[in-house]
Length: 94
Image (cartoon, rainbow, N blue to C red; front, side, top):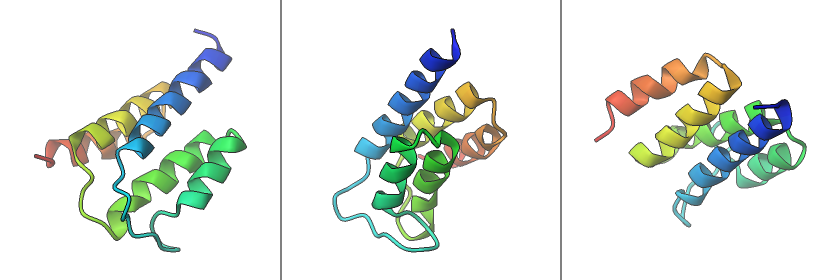
């Protein structure tokens, strides 16, 4: 898989996670902000977009297994250590 294909797959995983967020998600400067996520995604700042999404846990209930599975796939495609954190969250998510 070339770099462009990898970016496309990562972006698809991030968008899939984003689509699982409830409409009434709480946004904050310390957690998740939709406008920041979308700006990072548009600028191809995929790591920042992923980190923005995972901030949702700061002010909201856990969004569920499927959300974290998408973030885990994205982090794994990036080869990023966030994958370890997402695996831990998944292990504790019902």
